[in-house]
Length: 253
Image 1: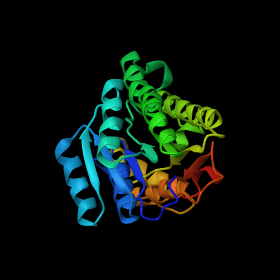
Image 2 (image 1 turned 90 degrees about the vertical axis):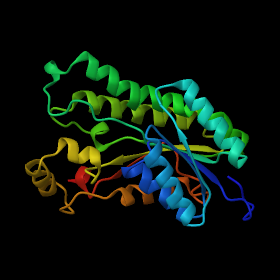
Image 3 (image 1 turned 180 degrees about the vertical axis):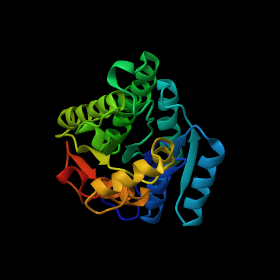
Image 4 (image 1 turned 180 degrees about the horizontal axis):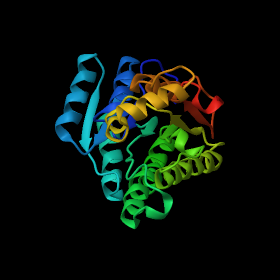
């Protein structure tokens, strides 16, 4: 990471048009980072980029399909061309697929879609990002996992398996680059108030979840953003290969 205070670091965030991604992009903007945002929805992405610019920070939105490796390469190239460097990345894009479905009823098509976005795209994103970050002198990558990737949840076998794969990718990649100034970690959100949460959780399900969370509530995207910002902080020089649960105490109970 740059030590020159005159150089604002650059972060790239996928899945940045809403929810956790958008909140994280705004958090980096408030902290003075230059932000490259990626997602499929151009109108929403441009709106988030404008919000960041309104904060006085630089922002760039690039419409990107994270399942297309060539698109990811173009995203990184565009980011470096715009800002001159890449210091950090938050690989946030993901899908939940079919949930509350018993394991023997999970569809092959669901497996293919979920693993394509949640696993293959995370690997491809890191492959596109790592050379640029190393060229900048090192930095940080954070992958978005889930507490479903570190413990079981009934009816979520495919999603849980995909997030467990993200955990494995994160820890292994961290070892690959530990001596090169590149720290790679993951956040593992618990129940978070996002569009995804609203899609699969009825009010009854949400009430049950609140009873299981020691803090008695779902989290907010901003609370995940603060963890990602900490993991990418240039001063955070000794944390790598970790999976940080941000879950209101859910996995501690």
